[in-house]
Image (tube, rainbow, N blue to C red; front, side, top):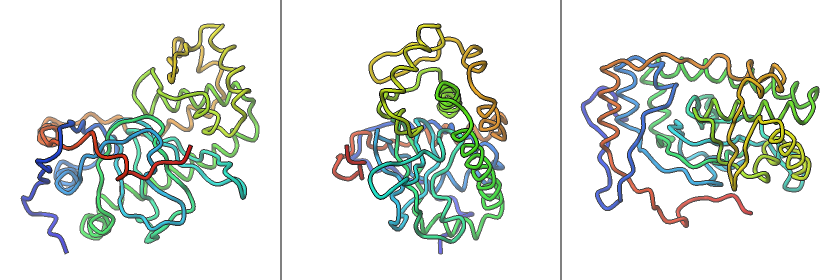
Length: 280
């Protein structure tokens, strides 16, 4: 059993090249300074690569992740083939590993990185001990789990009732919120997988949205040019899906912990063989 009130801090692997941790996760910002410090002591900053699988369906979970930057999709299998449907868009407001919170070791869903970034990785065993020792952390994640359930039910309503243009606008707005940026690094193929429609339909509709000045496309990226116009185009679901995320400022004392974490250096050039990558 680990002692979560000691003064130990994560020590980087000196053999690795450096990549700074950002300490941007909004769930961490909801914790008290002491509670946040405990998480930072036992979390390892790790790079996220596009199409990296953070959670594989029906495979025992080895780690939990607090996303610092970048974006990921939680996808459910839709048939006996390779068809999938996105059930959650994850970014700096989010956490990967909810089954562990509920005492479950596996998940029926896969979590795939859509845009590269950094996450704070916590070993599954350590994470479960944290929950037992830190009621504040457990309560926070239980509330987050409820938010995820609400979001999932809203996505069902959106995908059932709204047209492709509304759903595309909704997805772009939610993704932008999760990334904290107007630029979204995703291909048309990745976007079509995210909202479970044919790529040709996505390409056609995105072209129309670009013609009226809502977005601008470049190779492998989409830039939101007219946010108000995109919000008017979207269904109301984007506001519901973005609601409930705390925007509490990080205190000065908390920022000192973030500065300490930022000084931790890790590898950004890990061998791809050490990562589980979604097949093309």
